[in-house]
Image (cartoon, rainbow over all chains, first blue to last red; front, side, top):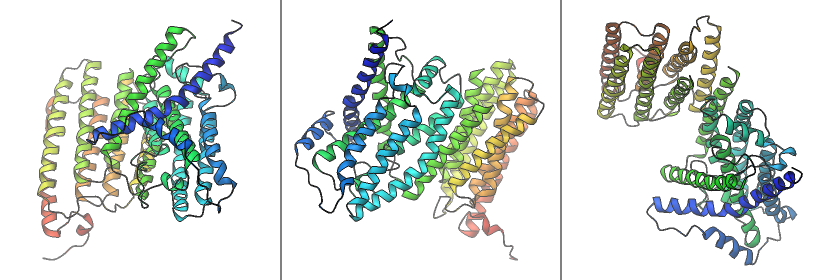
Length: 315
Length: 216
């Protein structure tokens, strides 16, 4: 029993490394599925890794008009994404760093990353950057209250904002026993699409100045910084997927430290993430980007859904 | 009974489908989904209470409300040559109407908590849902401008009434039930004719056209 905590810590670190290493693969997979469903051939699923490696070797151009904010933003973004990853249980219920922070801290880490991203967009003084920043500000201002409300519904049902607590009690009482969670599921799904910049909200593959949001902010980046930003976005998306999976469909997650359980947990997790990624890719194929001012309709839906979830909690 | 609760939740979600949609055919589709779920709920209640008549009611609900009425409405909307088949600017914007509907759901849960008739599981699960269907339907009627969405609001309201009557009384006599269904069918036919006349007279189905009376 004496060496159990250290084993748990090793597992926690493995989980973080798993998230970091696995995240570009999911991005590649989703791009591939999207391409396939649009009758294109598409790149291989490992293309994201090649992209990141190539960008790391490339020369980086920094505008001499920009300040230190522009230079540190990719690092802040990357580090905040990784730090958020420490609190997420992936295939094992307990995340050993959960004593330090809860799900609100994860949202806070995302907030820091996004804040610096918006500053960097404004920093270079290019008109596109400012445009992207202002749009991003509008969207994040809309989704933040909805996200908190959804998280409070989940925390209310599952007894606490600590992610390990949430996941373990979600694992014990499947959501079929608490129907109010269904509302939180809908809200969380919508917000997940918004946070990761998926299609009704933002088209991640466009460079058309009228429609791009996230791309507009990172337009000035090149080389290593761009690689870091791409990677931290992949990690952020992976973290949100993991949260979604482990809160709403946590079946077969490993609860005890046992070799078979953890292997089983990893396999089912990979399966679930693949299914979720393909589902989102199909949704992205089927919808067009919405007008910027209709985005608040979707967010209103998420808010309404989490409000009703709240009522179900108090009943 | 978790199954009852889950079906109630799905019915609420389907009701929100009517609130968030903008197009003519989207409402009818959303209404059809809602009614299919309602029919499933009726058969669930039949299973729980062991009243065999209710299976027949479920089949009637499915046949008349989920197949016949959407068919009629689709037929009418296809005939309409209204230039834009969208709810362009309703009296209340879509996003606030979603929030208001959520508040209505909350309100109906509180009302149901106040009532001293929560005798069994079915009543306590479905009565608040039927109230919210009623209120949301009423809200759709007063907040939209197009006549078709008002019909859909009326039908939603009727679904709520039907559900509340069903859970409180465990089903009327079958003849009354059949009579009600046929009534609804007839009312939809009549309102479709009105809709058609309206679009022929005014070239639009905007109900503001009905506010001014003319002498010709």
